[in-house]
Amino acid sequence: NIETYLESFNQLVAVDKQITDKLIEIDRAVDPIDPLLADNIEKEAAEVEAEQARLGVTSDRVQNTAIAFGVGAILVAILTAWLTTRTIVQPITSLTATATDLAEGQLDVRSDVKNQDETGTLAGVFNQMADRLQSTLTGLEAAVTKRTAELEERAKEMEASQRVTFAASERTSPEDFLDLLVNLLVDQFDVYH
Image 1 (cartoon, helix red, strand yellow):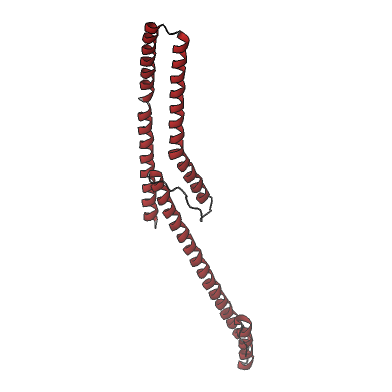
Image 2 (cartoon, one colour):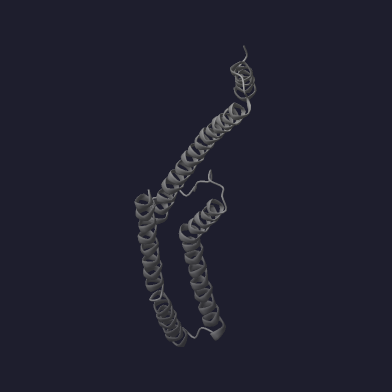
């Protein structure tokens, strides 16, 4: 049904909106981390400088500490990006590839995304839509095959009727007509007498 496909499509659009909203939330959640890291580094640097002045520590040590904090901040950012990619981007990329295969006519493809979040819901809805599409197309193909066979049989019958009518108009005696009719039936419908 078109309504079912529209409902599935609307569900896909809704899940896509949810994913987009989640990505925006993640961006917003990550944005405040940068100033916090900078503030923490500045505070640590200030504390180190104060401690250096108090204890007479060399500036090399302060610089090494700042570098260590910078490397730590970079590692946290890389880990956050990796986790985001793994939980959001990879499932969507996989689902996109599956949808492309389906659009190219591979009706037996299904998504293997098993997440318990919006992408998992999207994959489940996509698989239901693919099942329905495959079922509908299989049913249509069977109906077309059946109808084609019926039309071929009807054409065969009409051709035989036309031959009988034509033969009847040419024959003068009933015996000739009956012989011709029997031969036409044998030839046309594979009937043996």
